[in-house]
Length: 338
Image 1 (tube, rainbow, N blue to C red):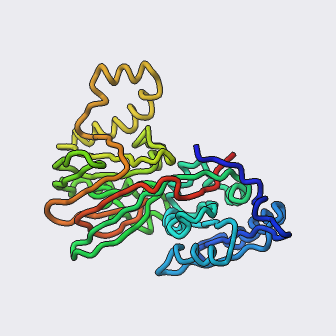
Image 2 (cartoon, helix red, strand yellow):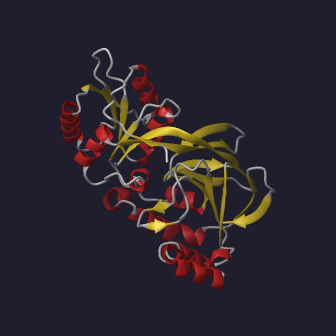
Image 3 (cartoon, rainbow, N blue to C red):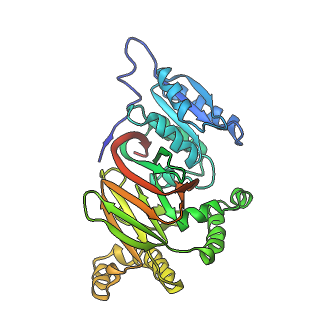
C-alpha cells in the first residue's frame, strides 16, 4: 500500500540535471568516514551528483537541516542516526514528497526495524536509501499541554506514551544504554515499576464517548513491534490512516504478568493461527481489562491530577497534563526494501 518504484529519480533527471542527495548526520557519532565512503560509492553507481552533507546541532537534531536540504533542491534526504534524528528529519520532510532514506546509527532504531531496514549493515542501508522503493507512511502529530499551560506540537513515527513507559525511559541510564542498547530499558523498567502509581485520565477516540479510567500508561502508536521482538500491537499498520491506542490498566503485579503474557505469548504465537485465535476467543484472552486496544484517527487525553511523564519514540519529552494525537496519512515518503 502506497509503494511506487524509485527508478533513480528519472523524473528529476531532466535537462541533463543529475539528482542529488543530502545526508543529515550527527558529527559526534562514530563511523562518519565509513558513511562518506559508502555514500560516495552509491551516488556514483546511481548517477547522483555529489551529496550535500549537513551536520546536526545540539539544539536541533535534524528538523532545520531537513528544511535546509529541501531549500537546496535535493531529491533525497538521508537521516544517519537513531530514532531521535530520524524523527526530527521526518518532521522537516513531512508533506514535502521528498523521500527519506534511513541509515540507522544508535541503540533503538525502532522505525528502521519495523520497516525491515538493515540496522547492523551501514553499507546495505546506504544502498537501500539510494535504490529502494518509495513508500508513503503515516505520521502521528502530538499536540501537548505542559503544566504551565503552554502548548507544543511534535511528530512521532513509532509510538508516543504517557505514564509508566515514559517514566521508564526517563530513568534509563544513558551510559548503560550506550553499552547494551535497548536492554537498558529493561533495567529502567525494573526500577520504575515498583515506584509507579496509576493515574486517572479521561480519553476519547475520534468523536466517541469519553472514558474515565485509572491507568498505568496510554500509548498511541503507528507501529507494533518493540525491541526484543515484542509484538505489542499485532494489527498496527504504518499506512492505514489510523492510530492504534493501547491502554494499560493492571491492578497489581499479577496484572502486569498478564500483560507480559499477552504481548510475548498470545500476540506473537497464538494469534498467528486460526486455532490459536479460536482458543483466545474461548478463554477470553481477547477481552482482558488489563490491556485494551482501540483504533481511530484522533485521540484526546486529559490527565486528572498531577502531570505525567511523556515520551516519543523512546525519547523523554518532559511532563504533560493533556494531549491530542492525530494521524497525518501518507505524509512521509520513506525508502524501504524492494
